[in-house]
Length: 226
Image 1: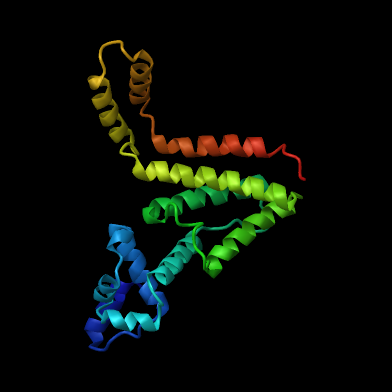
Image 2: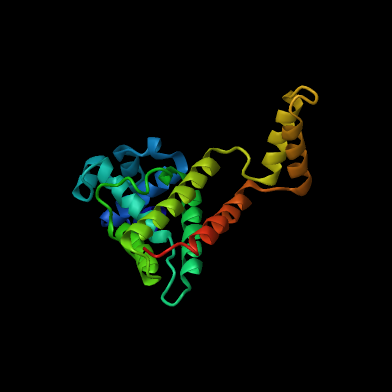
């Protein structure tokens, strides 16, 4: 039940909902999704749940504890491949699912791997990915190399995508038109050419993710195991 549903239930029954860590974290994630981490305060979480802010400390220690918890909620949203899936297919599916989760929760970019107290979903996620690589016979060093390269690409792309104004073909066309109009005639012919070509084809920046991902996986496939 979402925090809003809980509030509706309280209004119907006239009784306060039983506060829990899960309820506090869900409310915190909603606030972060709506306004970023800058909007995340104990007071706002309390207002969202219709309780006094001090009562939250029975369930969370401080803001860092909340960040640990909501990052873990995002990890829990990332669907992990099941047993028997070919390893490259599994790595690809996990990368796409991770990028999708980051797009749903932009505040997570740069914070998924920064927690000093990782939660169970976080740990399960990393253990599963390492298991995929160990299952293919990679050594610990090679598994770490591969994991690092994939995460650098996933998180780097998500950061670029979060900051971009051109994440749809329409936005790209508008931004490109503005840039081309600012250029002196023939001063930057290659920039003008690529801009016009991309506008003509309805190019979408988001499609670059899977193109780059497949290039990386193709390079990983023949790597030595040790």
